[in-house]
Image 1 (spheres, rainbow, N blue to C red):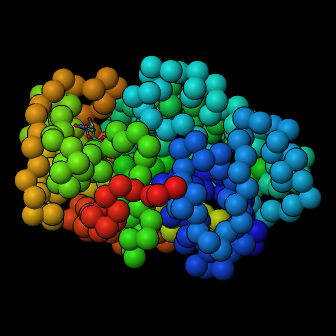
Image 2: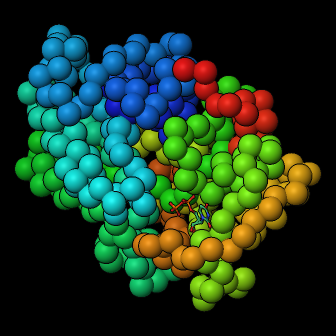
Length: 329
Ligand code: UDP
C-alpha cells in the first residue's frame, strides 16, 4: 500500500511514518519543515518538501504519483496561538485541507485519515468523552479541525471519499528505541516542559491555575502514548482498505491525571526536583478531558500498550535525556 503522509516530519506524524515503514508500507512524507524536523523522518520514506498552501506546488511535486491513501497531519496545532491568530488556523489549516482534498479528487485517491483533536470538546457535558459528546470547539484550532471534519462528512456523503477522523487527547512519549521523540520549536506542552525543568534547561514551570473543581485543583488530562496513536492510524488504514465506511474515533488512554500528578511523576521517574509556581488559568482550558476510546477498541481492536502515566513519562524521559537539545535538523 502506497501512503502519502502530510506533516510526516512532525511529532505524531514521524512516529506513524516510522511504524508504517517498519511494517513495509511504501511511504512518502510531504512536509514544509516549518514545524517538523528532517531528522525525524524515517530513512525508508521518500521525502517531498512542499507547502500545502501552495496548491500548484503540490500538483507539480506530486505529479504522476499514485497513492492508495493519505494521512493528513500537517497543521498549525497550538491552542493558545490559535486564540491570538485565528486566521492562521481557520484560514491556513482549512485551506491546506481544501488543497489536499482537491488534489486527491483530481488524482482519484479516496482514502483519507485526518489528525483531529480533543479540542473539539472544549466544554464537554460528560466525562468520559465519547464520539456522541456534543462538539463545542474550545478554540480556533478546534474549530479548524471541526470544519475539516464537516468537509469530510460532505465528501463522504457524496461517496467522493472514505475517511477516518482520529481525535487525539494529550499525545506524549517517544519511540520505543528513543530514536525519535517530541521536539516542538516552541514548546508549550506540559510533559516536555516539566522534563526540561528536570534537565536543568528551565528554572521552573508555571501551573496554569490550581482552583479548578478537580481533586487537587489542577486540570486533568488524558495522556496517550504517541506510539499507541501511531498504531491507531495503521489499524484505521487497514480498515479503510477493507471497508467503504467513514467514521470518527476518540483516542485516549481513558485515564485522567492532574498537572500536579504529572509534576510528581516526572520527579519520581527522573529523580530530579521540579520547581513550579502556580499562575493564572490559561484561557480556554477545560478542567477535565478524559476520553472514552471504547469505539475504536471494539471496532478496530486498538489496545493502548502504554496504559499508565509512569510508562508514558518514562518513555518521554528516555528521549529527552539522550537528546536534551532535540533534533539536530
Ligand atoms: N499546563 C500547565 N503549565 C504549562 C503547560 C501546560 O499548567 O506550562 C497545563 C495546561 O493548563 C493543561 C495541561 O497542563 O491543563 C496540559 O496542557 P498541554 O498544553 O500539554 O495540552 P492541552 O491539554 O492544552 O492540549
